[in-house]
Image (cartoon, rainbow, N blue to C red; front, side):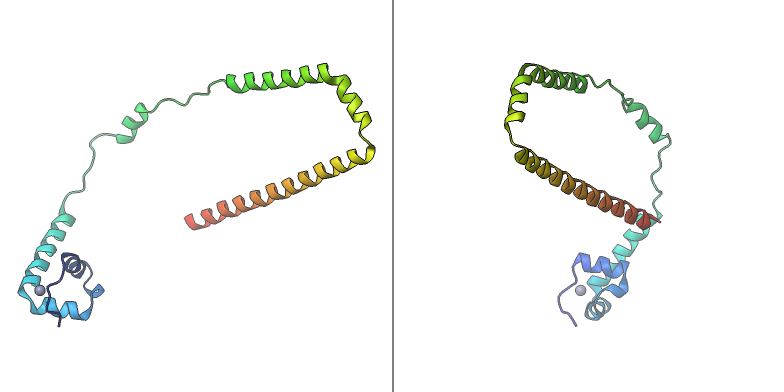
Length: 151
Ligand SMILES: [Zn+2]
């Protein structure tokens, strides 16, 4: 038998789920007038909460909220177009101005070096494609597992 009174949380648990508390606590409540009166108060309180009318809106809340939301705008992507045109222009100007220098440097570099550079670029490309494929597969698996959970 516990001599100390139960806490409010323990009494609430006893009222809500009588089997969830220990046998010692249940014995204390059965032998203690103070804890019994607290439990009776919580029983009344819980009954009143359950009996209270559920709050209901007498207007269509979703319609009001939807009216407040700004309409989705499909703005023309001016910034992206400006940046793209600027980048293409820079590349074009560089190719035009430095074409002779680029041609000379490509001719100067030996075939072996070019082959090594191409092989390196190809290796990096293959790794990136494999990584991209793995990431895609992982996302698909995640999406499929979420779908399964919802069912
Ligand atoms: Zn008590």
